[in-house]
Image (tube, rainbow, N blue to C red; front, side):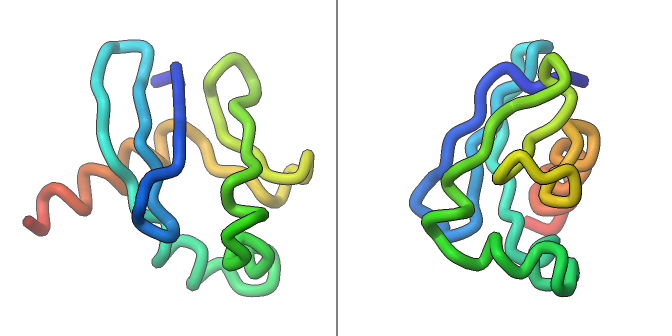
Length: 87
């Protein structure tokens, strides 16, 4: 699974994600950030949260060129499924 495009949405920790397989979904990273301890604490700042880039040929998102501030495409897909299955 690889990321084609990612953008923030109106949810403070929300991302609109498009994968190369054509699927499009919304992911809320609030719980992921809140359970990430000190490593992910900087992502609570909305300005920093919006400054990500797709890396490794679409395999992950990364913030601030920091390896610890990254999430892989498979994890994003799983978080999306968890949200949609709870609805």
